[in-house]
Length: 424
Image (tube, rainbow, N blue to C red; front, side, top):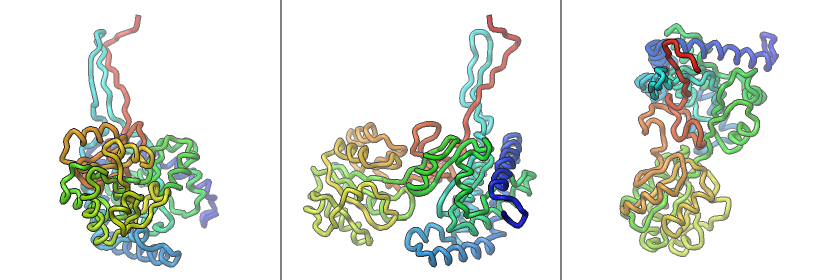
């Protein structure tokens, strides 16, 4: 029990019931009130910056003591620029048109019934995530924008940071006259709390969104009793076609892998068309190696660029999140698509080519949430799509797919208006 004498189960049950109250308040609030709340949240972040940075410093110190290092530690790190970016990202969400109540379609039946399909909030959305305290701010803003109450459960490595950010969020909600239960952060690192969320908190959770590694997503999908919006790992591929411009390909591949290696849009596998591998691969390999990237290649790739490490089967299904990339030589668009279908996660895949027909063939064959032509996989980001912030990249095929912004956090209902019609 905690100091108030409540068990964890009682506290989580209370949190679920409060979220339902918050959801009702958001659903019935005006678009202007939701916008005001988001603006107030953005203004509150700078006022809490000192506390947020102090909390993050303690989190990072403890994480380092536990052996967390490199890109994983970098994902949780906040500095003054990143805190300012939190406020900016929230403010940008306020600029997104409010989706609640928007008509998707409208028609009139021969009997005079007027039927409209209208966007409506999902209700209570639980987001379970690891690292990245910016998710706390992004998810809160997007849920308020879409009229949903949010239950946020971040990783234990950033618990203090998340709670410090939440203090600013709660202040903004209060300023706009909305209950703080519109957004709640689970304030315990007890893993049992996750199990209670997955069980649905007495049917008070309408949607669960996992954002993290393979083990987290697998647990959520296996145990959840509420619908899950899947966010699988970013096993992203860049296929360099025989008709690619070498300089363009080099720039795209280097950016896709090395701009930020710890984001889910980072490329993890490079596929090179065997029809031009002899000329293209050395250029690409040199550029990656000069950027500090380790290359793990199949036999054909190593024969052309001998400095590579030998790739093993696990490399094709590893989300490295560090400066390592696997490399394979494939037979044209069909070979690339077959490799992606076998090993990919359905997240983001790209082709580099000057052949328009080859590009369209790749787009048709590759069934991923995001397919790019002549652009870096690092554009797999809600902000880059014009959605403002995002909760994640959905790799499921139902409800929402790709960057999950405010619009993707709504469902719809039918509003039917009559003038006294009865059915014969």
